Length: 385
Image (tube, rainbow, N blue to C red):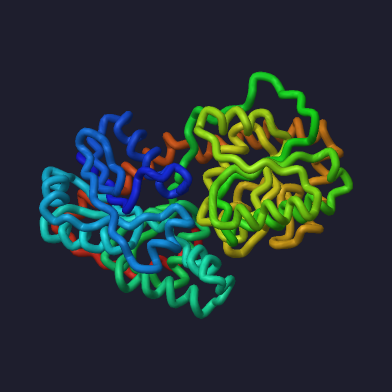
């Protein structure tokens, strides 16, 4: 297939949706497809690089969360769309909306992914769990973008159910973002001076790293624990001050893939404290490397799906609950070693190869329907995913 992926930016490696788009593009190419990317920072031979669009105030705020907006260039993008069998959209912003108009004008089939969880917006706007605000964002995204698609890629059953709940018309295709096969357990366990805990994710309010720092401060083994927070973001300074005040041994870093794998393989426990997550590929990568996870049991997150039993869940936003789980895994080496193998095997359910095959099936369904001339606008599926 000739596939075009439209995403505002493709060159910010600290953005999870960007990394997903890059993995999918590379994986689809390896499976024999011709893939073009339309984005700020697109630099492939066949890609279409667009200029960045400046939006007063919003651009400054978005930059803190590793987001840039692409500027629509009709003639340039039209040339990139020529010969495409399918165009897949990652974000629901202005670039994607105008590209959708152009794709419809050119008669090219389209699908969209749902990667912008409304709670990501509300937490960064200091509105937290405001149900009214989040419902309004769901409604806005639905009416201005997603109701124009009959098939929507949902990275988890959790977000698929949210779309059904909010009356989205397109059929949700539950397809994990998938993890790279390079993430594997170590050949032998690394000996650490301290108990190594790691978390990967943007340093943002909804990722809730502050709860992890507080939990370690309350742990019975505080002095024997070293925490590594991998990621960049607006909350870094606050987290550094919190750790210093509480006397928590923490390192902040951002690592390329090979170093990230090495760090995960050398760690003892993975904690995912985020209150808001559409999936959390970082958690899958960690368990694929043989790390037992401890995950925030949040109603706004899909990540609890990766927990195999209650020992890997803690009460959302509750440092005492998290401290108890950390202490349990610290004190039970043999059980942690046993569950390491169980989790590594479980991770294979979310392999990138499986996700790519499912994405191909979604693309083929859309292409066949479009070629048959069917005009489908189904009601939101009522089943639970």
